[in-house]
Image 1 (cartoon, rainbow, N blue to C red):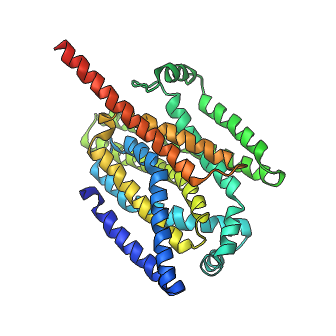
Image 2 (cartoon, rainbow, N blue to C red):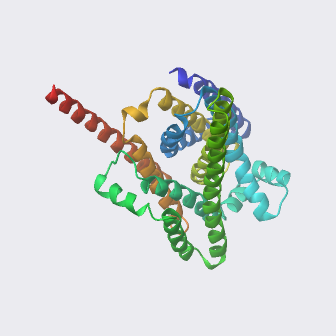
Image 3 (cartoon, rainbow, N blue to C red):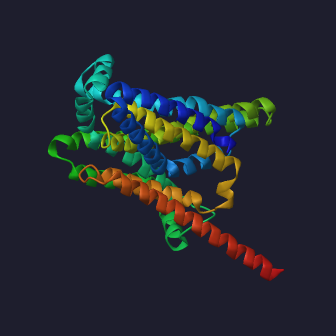
Length: 357
């Protein structure tokens, strides 16, 4: 439970602020309604982002304590205030040609119009986040891994992955299909947003590759000295941190858009999603510290399949409405199935060992 102490403290503070906000705007009825919606948003964020925690853990498990702390402090500030509050405001400001302060005033005093302006660009937001997450899934599924969950499928896909730029090729095909679903007015914006999703993903990979090349040169030049190793950790941590923040941003799109389907109050949305984001971050560290990914060998697979499903749902939402409940349940189903398969695998391995002995 030590991993979640700060989360419970933060939750108590956030709920207290929500209670005050609700009471000041609607008396006791407003207080009860606001607290209920805040709790619902927090649970929704956790259910939508559990697979995010697993993927984060797969990246974080090689990090030192310094970068884990940065992830939990600076990272949570970016996740909560950057992606759950500032990002929607920036979208409205850019698309509506308004100043940031005008949009903030709009969000606080006219939440209905603020919500309408943000939702008007739902298709572009979904295209960017969906394509980025699709590439995360495709690069995992095309990778030649030591452990396969569905061996008959993943071993064949790994062979396809040996073809250069296969994941980008598939992502572009899916993007073109999504563009065909968009209205004539939105088609251009959806295409540009999807291309940006590809560019951002490839940009992170390019920077990572450049830094890795520099690290190898430093380690060779300095004979694997302590200074070179420290530099390697620092640079590796920076690029890993950048990757996780972009990944979190893509996950947050779905949560933010889904939150506006429940309430237009930007303060309540930020508080509810912030509580969820805090628990997801701590869940990531918990999974790393407990070695859960090593213990449950298919958990990372399940998380990536859940990411693939979320990517498809986000791209489908360019034209079709998919309830957030279905999105959350699909992710939980993949994770639950992966846990069950991992437990079954452990029992079979123990049975084999017992038989050999």
